Length: 360
Ligand SMILES: NC(=O)c1ccc[n+]([C@@H]2O[C@H](COP(=O)([O-])OP(=O)(O)OC[C@H]3O[C@@H](n4cnc5c(N)ncnc54)[C@H](O)[C@@H]3O)[C@@H](O)[C@H]2O)c1
Image 1 (spheres, rainbow, N blue to C red):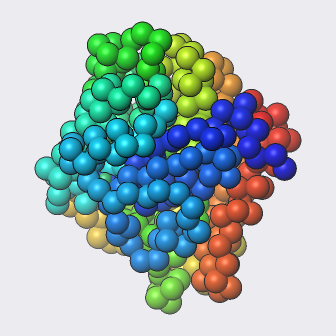
Image 2 (cartoon, rainbow, N blue to C red; image 1 turned 180 degrees about the horizontal axis):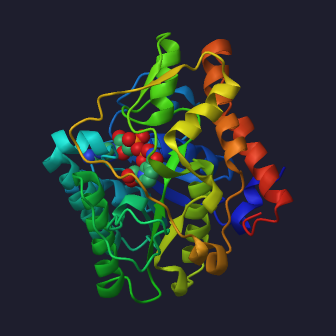
């Protein structure tokens, strides 16, 4: 399969800066970019979990360790490597952690984003910036409808508020600085992402996997919370599609875009665990009586009609394939020491081909 020709071949030999390359989504994005022949430069903190997907993959790119709040260091990276496109994924990405480390969360997610935009503004080589925020950027009204891109920003917990802020900053930079044809900025708002290689705290799939490793039952805190679950490759296909359009100078794409599953993949936590159990009989769970002291959203869905109609982006895998690929990735890693990242990427691309995805 000719992977280099995906997305019109735009990424081949292209210098792409990926912040957050040591994280879950960043490590998958770098893997995909490298398979398309991109020249990747990563910028992030050292990975904090062990194991982690970044360290398990063979690396053949420049991966710089630094803090995005360190303006001077970040500036030097831009001037030395002269990226043409920036995928900004570095963030403090955990809701529960944000309650204990609130200032750090705002500093990283808000001022870190300002730093990326400021330096991009001052670096001539940068033509396109894709800012990764979250479905949690919306003012959550706990209603049954999916949020649209023109709904109000908000955020109850510090993490969500920081992503709402990052969106407001994006909008301001789009209007004030990136409004010509020289540099284009867009944001991607994705839902709950799953897939192999995530060992973060307080996330459902990593919690399930850690309990299998410890031979215990996973405690489910909020069994009836509904979330837009999707495989990590889905939003990444959206970010890459956005990047392609921005690099071609298409100004109409320099906006905010939701990337989420079809409505029938908005499942409750207990439904996800029930499906996960089918692929690995070692998964056991019980519902926790401790619901915690901090507020967590119960109902959160995205309306992705804008991305479906205008960007021609569509999800590739339904939830059954998504959970199968996810659980089998960990099962193969834990039982056979095998990493399925390449197989999952190829399978995703093949399914996308069958679906006539625009980026094929
Ligand atoms: N995982 C999800 O379900 C999900 C859903 C919606 C949005 N997102 C967003 O996607 C992006 C990536 O999320 P993830 O799941 O890969 O998170 P992750 O925690 O696995 O990775 C975060 C990355 O950011 C880096 N980072 C954190 N603070 C930094 C700092 N101060 N300076 C430099 N680098 C720093 C980390 O080193 C790591 O590489 C984040 O912006 C997150 O908010 C994630």
